[in-house]
Length: 218
Image (cartoon, rainbow, N blue to C red; front, side, top):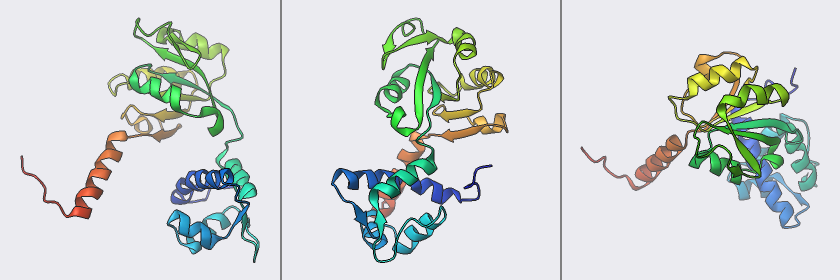
């Protein structure tokens, strides 16, 4: 049982931001920081920061604040970044290629071990020093390579059939760009959905709201 299982989702979602910002402080050779200083730089209240970090134990010292290196290491450990979960990527199109090339998997607790596609033009090409395999070979690959996670960069219409195959192989963890709701199909998996269009629409709303713009009629 995970000792942090009762931590709220909003707190968990703030941890990567703490981790990223603490890393930036380390790059600037900052060794310690108070919750007040941290709040001013991150746009959170000092009380919120203390409450968040107290969920995982006491990291700060009265009159000293937080050791940036220690807090950075602890949050990385809480996030599980000291693991090396083996991941395969399904879909070597523009999005899949961008994910494979630009994500810092090794620094984020993962190791990309395989890439798959069903397009003959992509099979056999190399991305991130990994040869793109035929999707038809995913079962044999997973039988000989322990696989923890599947990354879905496939169209929504293709996702169900591929998910059935991978779920049948015992893969229960997914980073999902497909816009297909895998959690509805299976109740025993862990999914992190990435909806880039949703994020763009939220940005549109924030801009429109800030400028009090009228909605255009079609």
